[in-house]
Length: 110
Image (cartoon, rainbow, N blue to C red; front, top):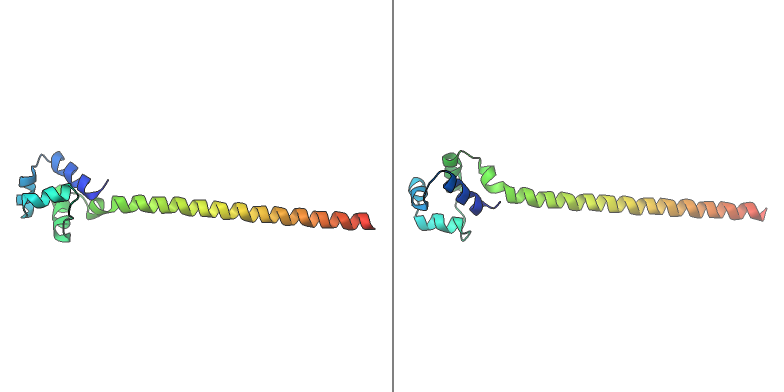
């Protein structure tokens, strides 16, 4: 969930209008509207004030989207590790078969 969606949800859960939230943060109602529409982002002072007002951490307000991206990055890392392992095992198998073939030829020569 993005910051704007969280702000809208938290405001509605507390039964606040945009005007009431704006008054508590000492900003305009239009600012709150723009934050909720994702047209602008609140400054750090307002993020801290909203975290205190809504009793949530600043991490909660800011981090979910980053954690999602990090989870996607972790999946990519796992895919790369598994792919590398498969390639490595394929090379080991190919070398083993080639070595076995070479030893078999030597046995038939003598």
